[in-house]
Length: 173
Image (cartoon, rainbow, N blue to C red):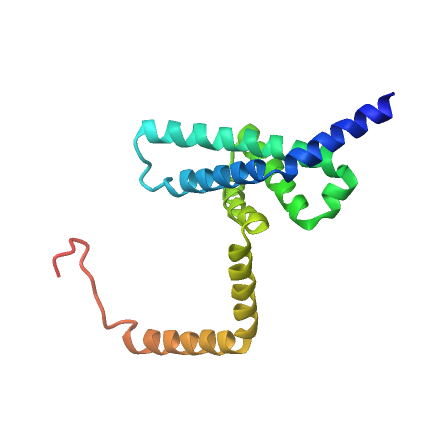
């Protein structure tokens, strides 16, 4: 009946999501997407590049949507959204659609988080991220001290040089 058909679809999705081809393909699309985002420069590149980058971003969004759908079917909606990594992926996919339909530079920045999707599949990257987080957290006191020293020297510089430097509008002095 219907329950067994649903179960067959779920088994199929689980088998597909587990294949190394599926996971490698997703990694390739993540890297392509990150590369397309890195190519976005100021001033804006040639129109051909902009179109190409837009196509790559759209294709990647579609691929990540398909990945999300397969994982939703494989795990079931409750398990999918309970898993923090899947939930993170899902939110980024949904934000991609917010950007497509409503446009917005702020939302575009969230696509940069797709690089963290690599951490899910790429063990060395995950270890590197964990060690970076550990390093930053253990440097808390040092960072506060560094910021304080920079602040003091900024104030010192302001006091010593505030009215001493003059620049002409023509830029020839």
